[in-house]
Length: 104
Image (cartoon, rainbow, N blue to C red; front, side):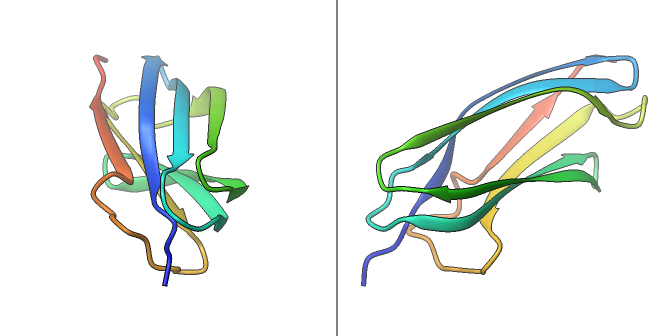
């Protein structure tokens, strides 16, 4: 059977006080469409928000730009994790997560 493979291609983020701004580029480099795609954003170990990205077809990319997402002011580690809400299997999971360390 063929499977999708979501991957975070590019992640940029900056923090101003309690607010996070970021740009994320996600692709499906697998062999099947990815449905119910979600990007979760964590500050430290705390999930801040989930962003629905819906479906990503084979070989296509989606970008997400967010500004002024409120996070704890002491949060210096931001984790981005892309996954399918339906729990569908993927070719690889090691390319689904990016961790950035930001200055205060």
